[in-house]
Length: 147
Image (tube, rainbow, N blue to C red; front, side):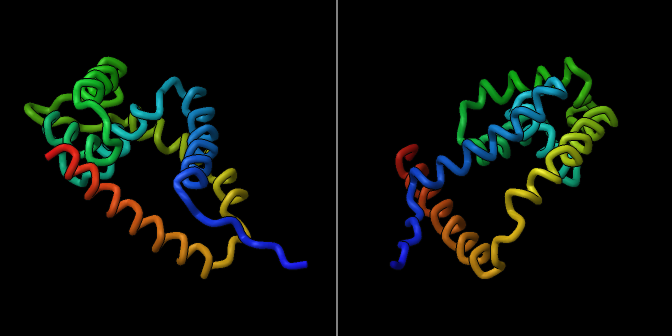
């Protein structure tokens, strides 16, 4: 008897996202930061050059599709917690901020290896293509709604 593979759809994507995010949030909580704080901090670290608060907020808004006021509050929290610092009109991650991200990455790496391990490369490639297309289309739909 042949079994039918599940079809990827919005529900399957959401369930996978929330399962993985649940693991990440568990680790983040041990470090005293939220998911959104981690996204803002990682964006600042990977930007390559210091960003103004407005640039950082815009970049994170593009990633999370959330209210800019909430992102600005998150930036303020990271400044208060000394994970980001102001350098003139720009923001820079502090050594402590970089350390938090490194610690989170080290703790999540073995979990990620267990979650993703053993999935054939061709399946990962197909899933990557589908997710990129879904992201592109959803971003276009969101842009049309916001126009």
